[in-house]
Length: 473
Image (cartoon, rainbow, N blue to C red):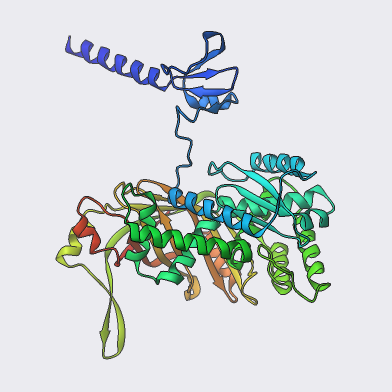
């Protein structure tokens, strides 16, 4: 009899869970709603789905009252603040043409690109605007805001070249380059102290932020936005966007010659105007354009059949001690540090690399590089982490001096993984080692960047580096 009651309880529970997943679609407006809300449409326009995924597959959109449609990504609140300031800076520096004759076509082209994007989209709401300027230029800022100048639109001669430009700009958004470059700016302004950086960023999302810190952050956001509007992104981030443009063209079986001809037009424009592009931001000087063209020409992707997987385990805390022979790095575990390490499970971070890109470097002449793409998963639901650095040993004793650096992921979340290794020579051997997963990670350094319930304990580790070993699969 007890078993019958247990079976009945399980069935009832499953029915309740199943019914809770149901959604109601307004067939007139195309919005998805949760059942039982007062703003449901008349029965005539209601259509029920077993879950929201099926409703989305049916071509319907979420009601933003019933569902939180914000992207589930780390530092989203900070990125929103940054977007607001950047939009203001652009409007202060440029004239926006709200009724340009090609605006509708460009917006439709942008939408088609997003439908064919080679990776899952973050969930930003995109829009495109035209800037009145004779200088051929493009700019993208966080949140899905793309800008093309009239000079650029007039310069290109076919839609495939426009597609190449838009793909490059969308890559800036999807790879969160506004946020990345702001954090680099933040480091230069505040120094590398983890506590200062952490507290400044935290104040955005806090319900009761420190007024002084929030004021400092707002000032920094405003200053950075003015720099972004005028100078654009670093060569490294431009290189990453170029790479994703090539990935998009490859995945959609398009001819990458259209990426190269856009660069050629910019290089020609530069050479006929005293060797530089006045007021440029997204595109740098003439030699840099040639280097970026070389990257596209020589670059190729490799996809793993099964991802290269690294599972990280904490082993100690890195300290640097002064000795008669100079600073020495050592791994320690004191009594207090043992409390922290015991609260971190083995396998708390996993990294899955599904592809890499090999090419001549566009920002370091004479160098080649491998760029690794994938996901990082933080299984610790109490702390955010930043991966400070991972180095690799491969056959022939070739050691990466650059490694993978500065990648942050929220508690219980996932984030894009972007690792970059620059080399001079031995590229084929290094590429072969990674292709065969014949590598050994070492000197893996990770820092916690979030407080747990034990605030005193956590504060003592904001400026410390947790050393890890890794299992390769």
